[in-house]
Image: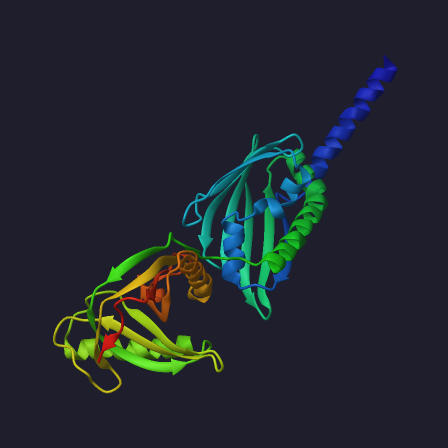
Length: 341
């Protein structure tokens, strides 16, 4: 009996000591790791927030290859979720709580038992691409929970550092594509009258010159009090492979009453037929969609003229997330095409 009594006393003393140690531990334990990735922040953000190829780098998934996974992806990221159930990692769910596209991501991680754990990501421009920070916050009011969180901090840090290294290696090896293109088709485009501004440039010069030209066109529309009658567009012609220089005609279809004024010309375009597709995503990935249309034309023995149109369905100034940009690409086929000045 005395032995049992002493064992009980020791046990109670140890329990009291553990509880006391637990109360001395912090309520919150934050585990943070950082990395620089040689890709722009918007692309890294999209990859992480959109659960793109999550299985390729997630350290917990890689630790349990037998786990069953399911993904539900929403267009704006928020409320996207993936769930897992495996013999080693158990059952749980990660859900996107809030985002600042290209800059910040907050996920909520919930296991079969227990409160959700916040997982935060920040994406900051860096000299070589993106400075990434990944944090996991564990909170507990109970002494046992505080003690467990403190004990597991090192293990969790080691796990997410492994994950961030795999993430970096995967992204820098495979890259990230933000865009997609719809099914390709053939469409007849009617004659149109537009106010346009024409310039020549190479690819690096184009964004600035395009903005300047559309500024002149919209200023003329306002001054002449005519109404836009369709989507703003750019027509690409006369590409010189040797110099990389091409001609761009930036314009807006207008109602009757438009007139030539300075650099802005009133131009009448003839009807044309084109192989076309809807590109959804940033402008710097348009080349990939052009290649898809050209492959379609080649496979279907469609001869292209070399003239290409882009019709811009939304204004990049109003779009925070470049994956929402929409551009119709129309590559003229050899039929009725051209313009009358």
